[in-house]
Length: 296
Image 1 (cartoon, helix red, strand yellow):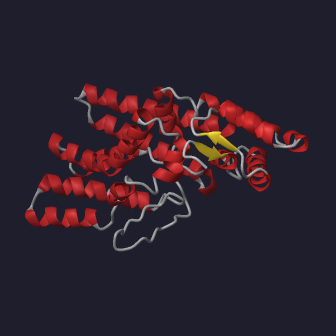
Image 2: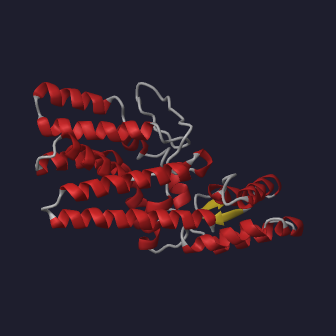
């Protein structure tokens, strides 16, 4: 097998969830399982579109399975509108809604709210330190995403299913979510009385701790390099198989509540109020798109 192709059943599996849109998930599983068992040598190019994937599936399966899988095949063919387009802006927008490593805005808003809740007095540097701590743990992942998506043109499936877990990027992504390094940074900041560094480390530790509880298949090795152990949480913030739809909805409601509260305490800062309301709008739109993708 060359590096430019992917087994057909593997290309199909990222869209398989047992609870996905009712019978569609079961049909998707049946399709992938049948192809893996009966046509394991079939491949698609890594830059496949949804339409070419659907065509390959139709060519691979017998008539009876086609008749029993109409919803799943229709679902796959429609993915072209959202997931497999090559245009950068479409890929970026879709990643914010669907891909499992892009909820950084929530972390930053949690940190922003924590900064104001612990000290409501205006202090830009303190607030920025908290917000930066909410961002930095995901910075290696964003760099990985942009390099492979926009510079290298790597398929999203290959990126998230393989390279994210096993490539030169992996140590940086892992260490950025370390439950060893962030507490050490916080301790060092406290001992040296570096206040801004302390706020930054507190926020980063909050980010990593939250991630500890909402990752399943994509769990981090939080104690690497001392241990490769992962906590496979029973809930995931993105995967419907582990209550991802519900976690995402709760996160959105909580974020909107925090942004509304932040809007209320910036009465004399119109630009910040506009920012807060703009973020509320973004979350409402993204959650609406998420629900549309889940039920169509």
